[in-house]
Length: 324
Image (cartoon, rainbow, N blue to C red; front, side, top):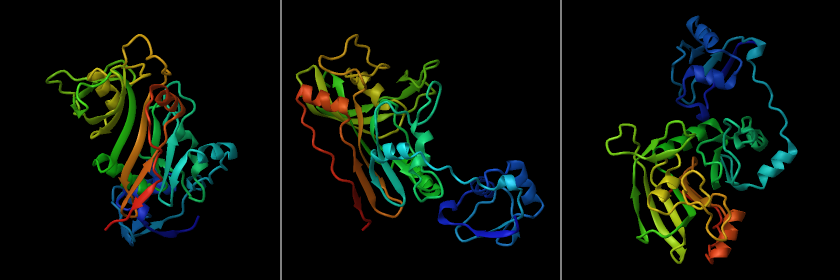
């Protein structure tokens, strides 16, 4: 490989020089990058630069001759059957994002005992892009509904920041046991992680130093007497299992929740799968304005809605509101 020059694009703005090289030349080790910087072989706009140098759009990076092992490997051709399977889940897509209707039971990422997960399938959604789409948020394995993917690293950073700074409006639907005392309200209960329990959370004790504040607004959309209710939930924070713990905390655990529903028997007529849907996301779009996408009821919740007599509107078509 001969000496090359490459301009920093918008997707690589404000990242460290060493991360830029690991992104574009994954075969380079951190030690190799630091040595090339130290000896002046890597330069930014003609000047020596350290591995921690932050890059700006339009800067030029000098790339010295690199070992063949550092060159990025061409991506493998996606499995056409997997690509077709994932294509059926797409609710919306453009050059910046892909929005999926994640089915209940499909894990977003791998872990102990999880062999099949969405993160391991994303090469099938690459299309004409040089890189695979990236996850920017998560849903529990048994939660269905709207899940957003970023199509480039720059979009991933933009959306991750939007989620972190609470610029994303999230709306969930849940079918729960019982009926809240108030038809609408706010649940403001801090959560703490349980030791030894995989991902489980509980209400924090007063004064617990490990507690994380968690806030959820709720509204009763419908109910079947005092036995079962349909709730609309708006989490204002994004804690693990927040909605599941909060619903159980007010005496209305989500149907099918094997972690937080302590009732011994399922509600009459209801399937035991978790009845929680990420119904709607409204988020800032990287190209300006906002994007709103809704997901339909999954089959098990659709059957429960029919059984309990709940009438849910169909999801609205995806919409882009342009910035004023």
